[in-house]
Length: 251
Length: 198
Image (cartoon, rainbow over all chains, first blue to last red; front, side):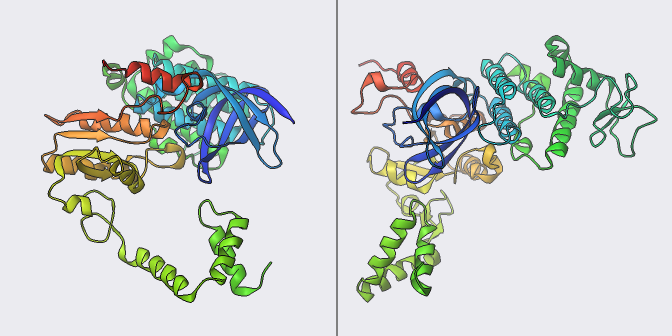
């Protein structure tokens, strides 16, 4: 019997047959794994609640012919409890899961850094101490860096001249100087560039001091940059609830 | 591979949820050996379900008329509305014989990963219904999973501004007939936070 064990975050669940589910996990050592969880839709299932999206779990798999089978699950962190109680956090967390699913690539190829990013972002959302939009944008920027598409912020993406610059080209790879600026480039504010840099480097003090216009512009640039490089639209991004800084503080 | 119509039937049956290739083959050969009247009855039932079944104008449940049986029933309490995800959930609650109010079927749950947002569900119809009718209690009975809980969170936020409206959520906790030691942390935690005085 070929058993293996790993820790992972549940990215996606799909119904299978009458009471089973196919669970997609992003695991620490094995990378992306799709496995069958038998009988988990029944109310008496022993681990049905542990293989829901956002759950961080310790799983035992049995290697199957096509898909592996989940035999045991223990909870490491129940992130879902803190996420589903707030709709903005929920939609942001869904975007994190979809992005991770797309970037993880082939099944069973280890992607430790992406796994750490996903677990960290979900932990931050679940704790509810930061604006979910900022957490999502910080995750997307760092996930793009993992994929090799990190946008240039402090230097020109084309010629490498140090900034600050005033234009941003999604197709060009980020900030561009006046000489390299392609037609149709965006002209974000200096505060937006600062926020992009702060989110990439984890400067939360600077990120949380940003205004709602800079946050909105940053979200737009990050989403456009990600989808340009993925060459496809993400289903979750249009459904992410973006509230202003003031509204978030009020709730 | 079988020839012509038998293979076509196996392939069509195999597209049904929960029916694998072996089951499809078994059903196809059962139908092949059945009495022609039985097959005609099945054929008629399939045709009628596609031609005659509509969704209730009020609650969104499956119905043969503009309004479903429950919305037409004057004995049902119109002040109490139970919100469910699918028509099959109405049947599950009706089997309990505990609920005497009416229903509202959303048509699914909020699931951004599948591209389902508030505009894809019958949430606007629910808000209109509560605004126009004298509803005093909304019972949220979405599934106790991630999507169902997120849908409940969203509904609570949308409904909290209606004056005099009580919004409740189905209790969740330990299933009857189970052992405590096998309960997962989430369920057991819910059971603890929702404990009641006896």
